[in-house]
Amino acid sequence: MKSKILWTLAAVFVFLFFVVAYMPAVHLIQSQTLPKGVKIYGVSGTVWHGKAQAVVVEGIPVTNVEWDIAGLPMLIGSVHADIKGGNLRDSDEVSFKGELRTSLLNPETVESDDFLLFLPVDRVLAEVQLPLPVNAGGRFRARVEALSFGPDCNELTGFGDWLNATVAGTRGPIDFGNYSAQLRCVGKGIGITVKEPNMLGLSLDAILEQGFSNFSIKGKFKPDPSLPEEVHQAAAIFGAPGPDGYTEIQL
Image 1 (cartoon, rainbow, N blue to C red):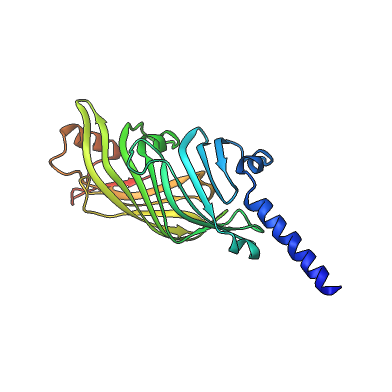
Image 2 (spheres, one colour; image 1 turned 135 degrees about the vertical axis):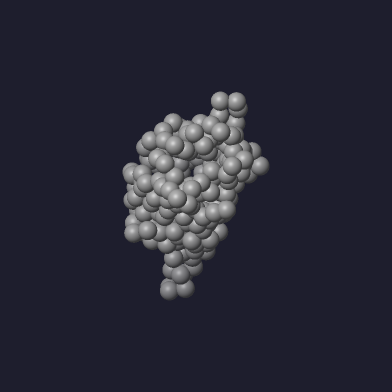
C-alpha cells in the first residue's frame, strides 16, 4: 500500500513538473498583474525558456528579451535566470545580459554576480531633472560584479562608464571622451564616484537616494584647454575657479 501511494505521488509530481515545464509563457503572463508602467509584447516559448519581442518600462522599450530559468533551484524557492535583451552593439538601444537571482518568498530582492547593462544617454537624461538642460549623447555602461538590491541597496560592487560622451554645442556635438565610475552602496542608496583623468578634469561623488527620488553631487572640474571656448564659458555658470584652476560643484 505504501509503495503504491509513493508511486502515485511521484507520478503526480512528475506530471505537474512537465505541465509547468511546458506551459506557454504567454498564459502565465496573461494571468498576472504587471507592475504599473510595464508592458510585454509578443511572448513565445515556455516559462523556463522564453522570449518577448518587446518589454516596455515607463515608456522605454527593450527588444528581443530572452530568459532561461534553471529548474533545480526552484525546489528550494529560488529563481535563477539568465536573461538578455536588446542589441549590445546598437548604441541607440537599451540592452543587457547576465544572471539574476531572486526568491519566491521575497521577490523584491534581486541578486547578481555578473550583469552588463547599456543605456543610451539621451534616454536616461530625459528621465532626470537636471539644474540645466543638457543635450548629450553616447552610452552608459554598467558592469555589476556583485549586487543585492531591493527595495534598498544592500550590496553593490561594479563599474560604470560613459562611452563616447558628447554634448551639443553651437557648432555641433562636442567630444568629451570617456568617463569611468565606481559603483557602491551608500546607506540605502547608490554611490557613484568619478575620478580623473578625463577631458573635463572631473572628479565627483554622486549619491542616488533610496527609490531614486533624489540625488546629490559634490566634486570639481577643470576643462581641458583643447575643449572649445564655449565649454570654458559655460563652466563659469558654476562659479569662478579656485587658485588650482578647478571649479567646485555641489548640487
